[in-house]
Image 1 (tube, rainbow, N blue to C red):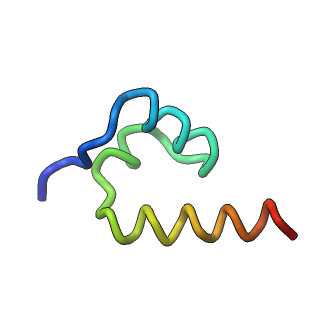
Image 2: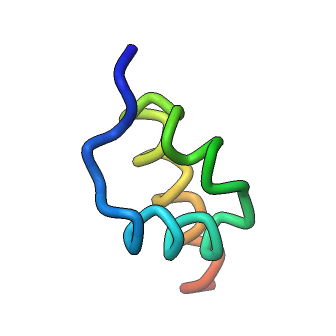
Length: 46
């Protein structure tokens, strides 16, 4: 599986928002990353 096609700035922002290491963000499958982003968004809107 190839790394996500996102910029370093995007990876850094996601790592901070999801509280995960950048390396884990870059090697995470896209569908799992999207799911984690949606979960984080739900937490911030409640």
